[in-house]
Amino acid sequence: MLGIDDAIAGVSKLIDDGINAAFPTPEAKASAQAAIIKAQTDAAVATLQQQMSVMLAEANSKDPWTSRARPSFLYVMYVMILAAIPMGVVAALRPELATAIAQGMRAWLAAIPDALWQVFGVCFCGYTASRGWEKIKGVSK
Figure 1 (cartoon, rainbow, N blue to C red):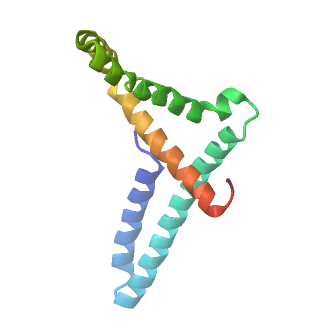
Figure 2: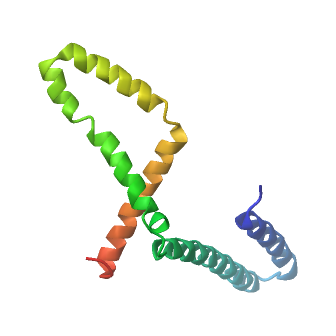
């Protein structure tokens, strides 16, 4: 499925070909190409602003299910990862029990689709980056 970026790229290619035909001098061509680059940049900024407005609307929602969805997902994943820590103690005391538990956990974690792990990684990185940015800008403490 083609997105807005693909449409913009296609139109930009047509315009660029038209500029090459219409402007024989390098100065005029450079000026027209600069205008195209500015239009592409403006379109990219507009797309980012739309995405940001959706994220901000979700974060500022009065509905706790919507506003807490991203952090809650991360907390669930943290619990899953931190559950592995007690396994060191179990392995020290009863290695055969630790082996059986590890096999069960391995099977359970392998059942989680790769796409979910990818979503976790993206959410983790995005959430961490946004919190860091808020702190740098002084919005959050």
